[in-house]
Every structure is written in structure tokens, then in C-alpha cells.
Length: 342
Image 1 (tube, rainbow, N blue to C red):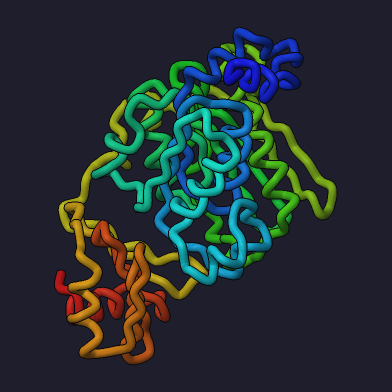
Image 2: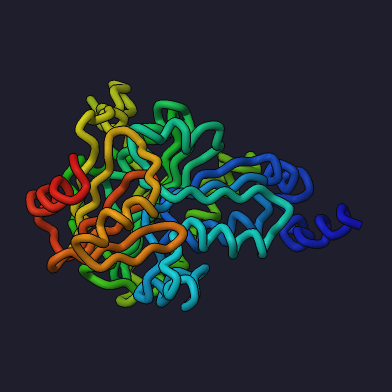
């Protein structure tokens, strides 16, 4: 009976000739990593889980807020009211969609220090993030370990998508230099949900091609379009850039671990994230006792909020802290040092 249900679940997908029964078996044996469980990530995860990919792992550092609900399809008002970490909320929803596969949500920030642990044994990496710092990290790891990296990005009504395959295509660094990003994000320029669905669907389709062994069908272009104005461009991926640090020199600069940890200003969100160089296992109940002496504190099973002066500190069990209410890194570090300790 269980085998009949499994065949029935994927029957329409298996009728699609390029996949068929053999392709479905390959999907069931595949493992993917999705980095970021926001707008793109939720669509990607939904497609991978419904398609029957055997192991779907994802990591996200954020929690659900009301402003996410317009475009992040796996979340609802209850998730936002409870401030659930996105990885937890997504894992709960996806397990209700497909109980036959392994679904693994990780609450955390992908860094050079933990990417080996997070990305081990996956067959490809799907980009659901919103910043180039993390994208270069994924790109460098993918090319170092020979794993395809499926890039996607959206802002406003514009989207871009490309697939980078080590040894066969240029890498992300060949298309854009580190620090050359536009600086636009959904929090500064807005975004409409339809462009998210389209880009994530392109990513998911390219992922399926790779996972079922149809690499020859993968599009060898950088797709770019403006959905609102009806513009689109399909640009052939050029040869790798001479002297590219990643795919030519094989130096992988994004994988270098910084001893002082990582401090990131989240553009447009008046938030600075501080990540320690070494993972910490924090007892949030103990932090509640400490911080309620200096401000208003709210504790959930997954995080702790502390309103101190005109700022808010959000603490996670892995030692990450969001300093909300400022984009000034110097001020954020000072507040962190005062109440948390460097």
C-alpha cells in the first residue's frame, strides 16, 4: 500500500518523459541544500519536497515577521505572531506536505566556520539568500568541492538566474567582483511575489535537470528580466575570467575563517548581526535573568528579545545576536560589548 501511494504521489511527474521512473529514483536518492528560507527559499523548498528529493536541508538565520507573509509562501500569521525561526516554521510545514523524505531545517547563519558541516554530502546548493557575501561563500564551497551552485536573485520586479557547474562553466566571481553588488534589497526597494515564484521555479527546474542526470539540458545562460515592464535578456555565460580566484586560481577566499567572528549590517533593516567566531550554545533562560535587569525581555522557545534603551537585542541559541534599531556597526559593537561581552 505504501509503495502504491508513493507511485501515485509522483505519477504525473514520472509521466514527464525527461524524468520518468528512473529520474524519480534518482530524485529519491538525492540531497540538496537550500541557503535562506525567505522568499526564494520557501518556493525552492516547496518544489524540492513535493518533487520527492530524498533529503532536503536548509539553513536560515532569521525569524518570521508579518512583512514576510506577502511573498514567503510557507509561513502564516501564527508563525509571525510566535516569531518562529524560519527554518523551524518551514520544516514543520514541509513535513506535513511529504512525510516520505528527510527534511532538515537548521537555525543559523551560514559562515566559513560551519559550511563544511552544513553542506556535507549534498548534490547541489540552491541559492535562497539575499546578499552577495553569502553567495560568494556558496560559490567558493561549490567550486572547491565540485558541487553545482544554482544562483537566483530578486528585487522589486527584477530577477536573475544562472547555474554554475564546476569544471564546465564560469563561477559567480567571473560575472561579478566582490563588493560590486547594487546594494538593493527587498527591504530597500521592495519586491512583488510573482517575480519570486518565477525565479525560484527556474532554479528548481535547473536543479531537477541536474538531479535526474540530464545535465545537457541545463541552460548555459544568465537569465535576467523585469516582470513589471516586460523586459528580458538571456546572456550566454562567457568563458571563465582570467585569474579568477575561485575557478582559475582555486584560492576560495570566502572560505577563510575570520578569527574575530563576523559582523554584518543587514541593508535596509536597521539591523547589525554579530556572529562569534566559535559557535556558542546559549541557555536563553540564563540570558533572560541577566538582561531583564536592564530592559524589557521576551523569551520564546527559539530566541530572546531584549529592549534596551532605544535598541533591541535578539539572541539565538547558537550565539548570534541581532542588534536592531541601528545600521551603525560601531554602535552595535559597543552595545554588544556592554551587555553581551565581546
